[in-house]
Length: 171
Length: 107
Image 1: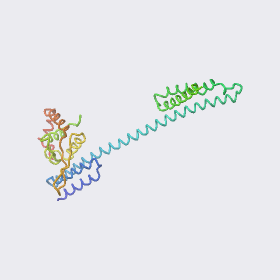
Image 2: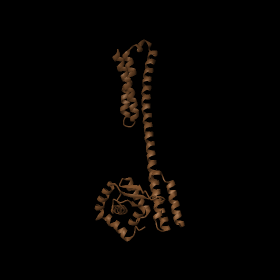
Image 3: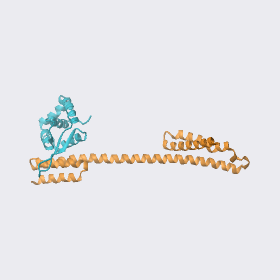
Image 4: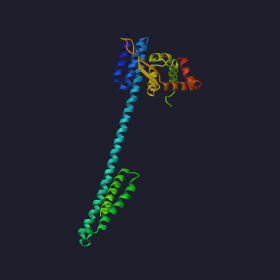
């Protein structure tokens, strides 16, 4: 066996070792064909061409793999962003209701003669009706660009509305 | 389109269409088509990935390493026959024939 043929065999064995699993079978196929090629230089040229083909095939596989990974990361980032948006909408709505409740307690403290705490409709208007109207307005405004935040606000609005509905239904 | 029809691809399809039922070896295909390994194998890989070609390791005699063999799948045979008849009189078929006649794709 001449030197060019030995070099050809070494090159293709290296291709088998280095190639990703999907390309390995092809590299092995190219190596097997070496035994049937007449002429040492022809064998070397065969190996060089084959090595190039394997390299291109492997590059395609790697590119597909990395593109797939990037897409997965993008999808995960997108899901994370949506979850954070939804939670911030929920938290924002909760803070608005807490503020409304704070305003009512402050009014009760500053003007005890009004007896705000004993007036159900005042309580419902301050803590529920006004915040619900704000939530709907905010959700409509945010929906086109920040759908996740709007969904969080709406979720809280529906939950709070159901709470009030059940309260009155049970009475 | 299932496979990009370059003149080299047409040559490979033609080589497979000769005795289409038989298994063929890489080096023999290279000799018959005049394509170098760096051109032939990417075409074979694409055809196999698209389900046009089935591959198999030859169960060789003891002591001899097996060889990789190729032949059309039923889909591949249909595809080749359709495209061979479509390309026969077209510029692509003429280019493929010309490459072979002029020896421009000779190994």
